[in-house]
Length: 321
Image (cartoon, rainbow, N blue to C red; front, side, top):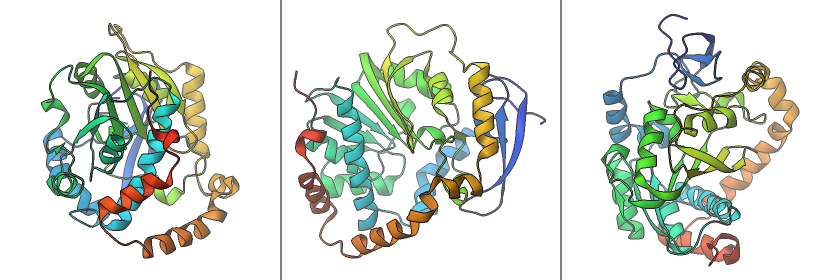
């Protein structure tokens, strides 16, 4: 592959994969780095084009709206509660911690995090969604980018399905390290490229510049963060702690881990998906979701309040110390 450069390890050798964009339907060239196993688009867009795209077009392309519909609020609320439960599992969080959600979307996670006891706010490049969050939930979602944040300004940073969109993962990790206070925590969730039960129709997107496994996400963070808790059943969730002193070099996957990642890439497809069993239950789960969403009513805020009240408060509230 000509002109390939891995954005994680700077290697120039890769396996070429031609896949189909799940949204646009056209061909999408993908590269698998032979040295570190990072999967990335073969031709990455320039940063200025990306900034403009996420500020004006991304939400419309992928949601079809300028602000969230009630069904989007419901889905985001359920997912936010699951993420708050994951944070509590770490046993390291306490009420009142300053939390910053990067790529906060419509603000559902920030609102529910505040209800769970965090001093939460967020940033979001899309003005329609950031204004929606302030109007509907009364939370602060600033329309800005990561590089505009102040240093040492927060204790917990969260990025949910954001990191795979960032063109320079190492620069992003370095900047987040600067934003966090000493001993701060970073919680990232990304699509899991090794997930066996992902539909082949719903894996590859032009908006996803990188596709991470637990090995490559840990490597991207390794100079600045140490992993505390990892869950890769489905989407990949990792909680990291800020290193007091950054390492001189990243900790790349071993040769066995690289080979494991490549074998998993080769195995991905309809056969694996059908054998996983997820394909058999998905139609029923989709019907149930549609029936639930058809009955939704009220304001976005009242919907989130109802979801929060329906959960066990002890399952999501930070632990007092």
